[in-house]
Image (cartoon, rainbow, N blue to C red; front, side, top):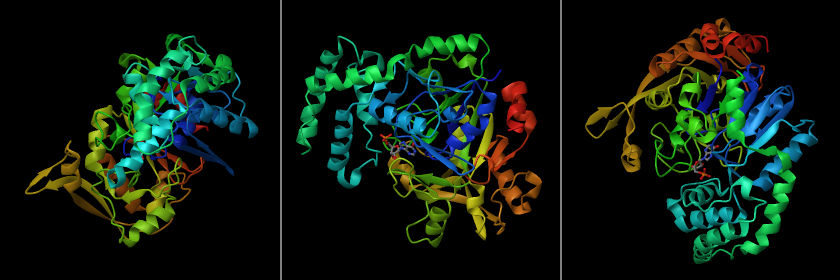
Length: 444
Ligand code: IMP
């Protein structure tokens, strides 16, 4: 009981950081399993505000151990900076922030390549976070990646040379300055290995031991299911497996060890970067500016304004099936407070036919016309609501529709950015997922 995956069901930025932080009292450890510092997870409580990129959101709870799992790509310089910033704010990570020796390293050359490629693509760019995530995963798949455990090893220079041969030509051909020579990176890598010290461990073996001991582990997804390399809106995706199955691959945990999946969904939809987004509000739509401002829809990692649109329940249902979602956490309901009318997409029109799943081909998905159900707005504040009974009837009707269309119960509802601003629903479902430790959340 109690090994749970928490992941985003849209294109990222669903508010996973807050939900993970909120669930943490019921867990002993929080494990990131894919992605790198392309992620931006925000946690607020009282007046405190933390933006985490590599460190699992659970680290803000002193009883929780954070693990950066094997499927991640880690920029050690960014990680060390994040640890330093946390320590400076009184978050002690000593002995409770571990890094898998199998995770791969994002090198400065990967960032240069990411940037050079995006510039070369011009208007056809993916809109990556420019953090070097794609190139780091490419090197891993080409079997010349630098694993975290390799940073201080004898074979380091050899692997760096192999990478240089693959990357340097492409960077300079794109007109960017020549990348640093392999020999000049060795000392930097060694210094990273030293600074990370005994945080570097065999995380897979450790997780297996914890599962056997009955410790409860939360697997924290980054990005969102629709950015998955295989099942997202390819090629406008990230380079890792962002689905629930990706948690098993990236953390090295058997599917049979997982007890449930909590999917996080924003009460509307956002996306950063390029790619299909059927329910997107047009640039001229006055609602766009309102929702972007009201929901503070600027990227946590890049500061880019996010694209904003109506909730897409067809996509949500697809994501629930893909990930075997057991329960939903709905975030940012309060952002919709002022609207007179709301829409939820239930399917798409493609030329003269209708369908309920987004086509695999990006151009076809771009052309999909959403079919909407319209709901009356509540036009009163729900911000900070703590109890479902205090919600306006129109807001409850909207949530009922989300639940019905997704086919999954809602267990958490976020009504504001702070930890405190949350409604717990259907406690029996949470109990089934978390066992007696569901109580620790109710008593938070
Ligand atoms: P990359 O992961 O930096 O390669 O970017 C690939 C795509 O994923 C781009 O559209 C990014 O905007 C998007 N992306 C990556 N990380 C996040 C995230 O944490 N939230 C939302 N979008 C993301």
